[in-house]
Structure formats: C-alpha cells, structure tokens
Image (cartoon, rainbow over all chains, first blue to last red; front, top):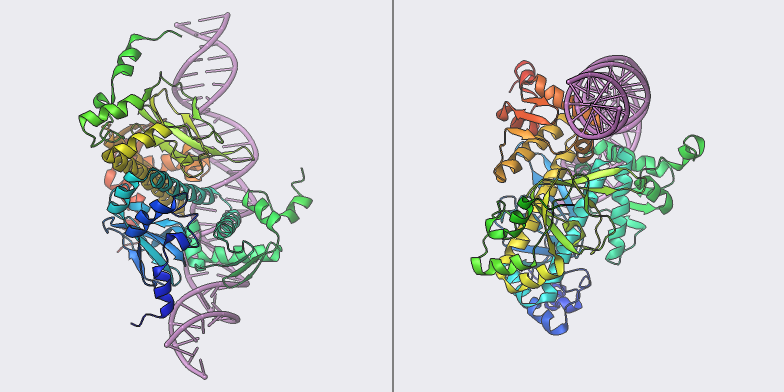
Length: 253
Length: 253
DNA sequence: CGGAAACTTGACACTCATCAAGGTGTGTGG
DNA sequence: CCACACACCTTGATGAGTGTCAAGTTTCCG
C-alpha cells in the first residue's frame, strides 16, 4: 500500500485546478466561495476497476464525481441479473439515485481505475444553502443527470437494435467531446455485455450491431476501440432513418 | 368563460389544505414557512384535457404540480412521432426535464381535466435558499422523479412485452395508493397508444397484453377500467417470472 | 505461454411490429 | 331519443428482427 507521489500531487489540487471543474459542481462559482466547497470535498485514493462506491440498499451518505475514469450504475434484481442504469464519465455526479428515498437503489462500479471526489451529502446541502450559485449549479448538474436518463430512455424505446446502438455511440461521443476527449476515436470503458444490459439487448445483438455498422462504413471497430468514420451517417441512423444503402434503393423521398 | 364558484373556493385553499401536501413540496415544512411557499404558488384555473403546460423548446419558467388530474410528458422527434417520457399523477412535479439546460425538452399534456399549481422557478430557488427544509424537500421530490425515471427504464429493458405491461400496472397501482386512491380498481387516464409509446411497444401489443392478463385471471379489463384480481400473480409477472399456468407445467423449480 | 474473459459468428425458433379489418364506446347534432 | 361520426380498442395473419443456444476466435493478464 505505497502511495505513488503522483497521487499526493493530485490529491492536493483543489477544484480550481480540476480538469472537469466547468462541468462539475464548481462551475460558475467565484474563487472565494470555491474554497468553501473545496473544504468538504474528499479526494480519495484511486479506485480500482470493479470496486464499488456504494451498494444497493446503502443509505445515501455522499455523492461522487470521477475526475478521471468511468463508472456504471447497475441495479440488481432479486433474481440476480444486472441492469445497467447509467454510465458516468468524469464530471458527472454519481449517487443521485438515492435522493428520493435516502437509500441507494443502484450500485456504482468502477469500469476503469478512477480518481473520484466524494462529497458528503449533508455538508453539501449546508453549503448549498449558503451559496446560491452552488445551489443553482447543484440543481443544474442534477438536471443534466435527468437529461442523460431521458436520453437513455430515448434509446430504450427504439425498436430496432441498430438504432439503439447508433444512438448510444452518438451520445457517448458527444459526452466525450464535452470533457475534452476525441469524439471520433473512442475507447469504450465498458464491455459489450454492459452495453447490452444498458440498451436492453442481448450481448450478441450488440456485437452484431457493431459489426454491421462497420460493414456499412459508419465506424471501425477493434475490440473496445471505436472510430467514427461517417458521423453524418451515424447521426442519421441514430435518428431512425434506414441505412443509406437502403435509402437509395428503396425508401426514396 | 364563467368561473363556477367551486373554483374560487379551491383556488383560495393553500398548500396547508391540499390533499397532496405530504407528497409535494410542502411536506415537512413548518406552518410559518409554508406561508412563504404559498405566496409564490400560482393556482391556475382548471386545465382542459389535451392542453399543454409547456412545449418543447420553451425556456424553463416554472415547475408544475397537479392537485388532481394527470399529465403525460412527451418528447417529439423531428420525424414527428411522440415518445411518452413519463406520466404524472397529483403531487408529482412536472417540468424538471429543463433543469439541466434551462430549456424544456418535452411537452406536458393534460390527460384529463386537471387543477395545477405553477411555481416560478426563480422564486422557488430564492425561497429554497432561505428555507433549508424546503431545499431538502425540493431535492427529495426531484429524487423521487429520478426514481420514477429509473422505474421506467426497468420496464423498458425488459424484453418480454407482458413483463413491461405487468410492471407498468404494478407501478401505477403503487403510485395511486400513494395519493390515497384505490390500488386495485384503477381508471387509466391514458390511452393504449400512450402506454405503448411509454413502454416502447406497438399499441396492438399493449392491447393483446391486457387481454392476455385478463385471460390469465390477473386483471379484469373494460376499456380504461382495470381491476387487479390477483396482485400476487401480477407482482410475479412484473418481476420476470413466467405465468403461473406455465410454471406448474414446465419451468418447475 | 497458458488460461480465462471477452468478443464474434452461425443456426433456429419465437416474439412482436406491421398491416388490415372489425368492434365498442362516446359525444354531437338532428 | 336516435343516428351518425369519430376516436379508441380488439383481434387476426404474416414476416422480420432478435433472443437463445452453441461453437469458435481473439484479447488480455498473470
């Protein structure tokens, strides 16, 4: 259990120097007030792949944000199979599922090694009550989380598997751009099975969908590496249009 | 456009006398503070079936709560077809979809004639900043809304249409009990088509699902009137078990 | 290098979307 | 009060899409 020096350096850095500060709770908060927030943020040592931030049934104690790395939240049914409720990139709050009842209904699992901030909920509420800009920003990031959930539903109501997959890649790419990463050369942090459980599909269907998109020249896939070769076409597919190939032949107009 | 006297009487009543006060924003707020909240709540004249509280693209001005009656929120794709994002019963906040961006991504349509409260967002934030219990309750009702969205996803990932339908009835019944209505003799405020667009199914599939549940003795259906005849069986179906009939014969153990 | 996990591909059955027609109920106007 | 129109719901037939089972292949990590 040795701490590599890089950790200590990272741990010392406050929100002011964080790469996702403009997306996260600190966004729009003045320098002085930021220190108030900084005080209650716990910067934890790296979390290993597969580790959990909380389990289903845990009482809501803190919300979490990854500075880097990503998470999935899964809800485990009594029969033991997992549903993936969401994927969380850096800057996106994790743990809001417990806001309603005070008890987590999901568990948050690290998809990669990750550095996270932990923010105790009671302290967050206290500070938010004193800093109107923080309160406003808190509502905003919660709202963004609601927006992602609705995007998720938009995928799930699509009846065609390929539409769901296209929409998934489309949205993920968009979110990666938001945090300053490439939107066309992705490395998926999650497995095909995770994607399947996120999209309500069989994992084989996801695999076939990726293959199909590659055959159609929309993406290039190599395991978890995905290159978006034809963004316009991906967008079209995501919005429910049939593949371009078919459009020319059949459904013209 | 005459105002029947019953309206005036209703309009005068504040949160303190509202039937859903324990579920809505006033929950847990002391009598004195409640008056502060009451001041910013606008109680509007009844909304007719089919009327909209806001449209997609509208800037977030207010959030709404029905005192009675129900709403759906739908997101309209560019191709013009609707997806039903949620159903909203009395006491459940409507309009939170705009929290993230400040712009509504859905539109809220009255399913029945309804009486609603309108709460201007800027004033709500101001008052919440001054009343910690209100801030806390606001987060809670938002969290409950997030929870309902996750319930919605739980339906959508189910691969069997009948599971989705069973889960839908199960959840709706539960919510009706919450607002003091019968959980076994429901009158659905929404059409089969609305349900279909909510569940990601064809409307015919929903209709057949209802028929099937009736044949199996789980419910009794007559148009929008639904009687839950065998709650245990409904719960079982909702949780992914095969129908009891089949269980005895085939999948024993 | 070996083993396990992750991913791909194939074959087949079954569910469900779709198209089409008929039935039920409700409200409006004669 | 009846008749008509319209929206809503049910039912049937059929084919396409996808889940499932079953091998294989690749990648990753120890």
